[in-house]
Image (tube, rainbow, N blue to C red; front, side):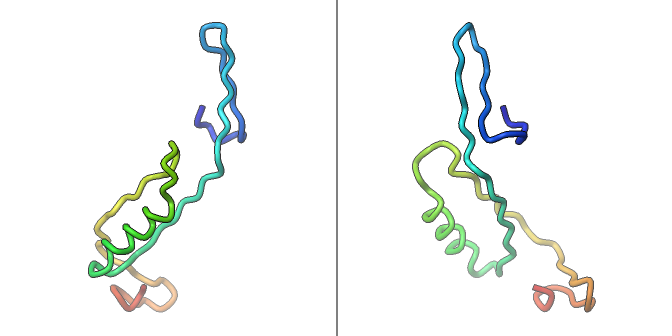
Length: 79
């Protein structure tokens, strides 16, 4: 079902055909300061929540290091 090859997928399950209509997917990656993680997560969740399956997931991870390749800047200066 989730092979991303088409927007509509059908399957034959016990002699009954079911059609699945997949919504377009978007992946967003953000790097924010620790001080604003909670309000950013709350804002994204409030806007994305429809109450239907497929609203998405939010993963909050520690960012160990950031390096801007072009300038060599590191840490907050690179963001």
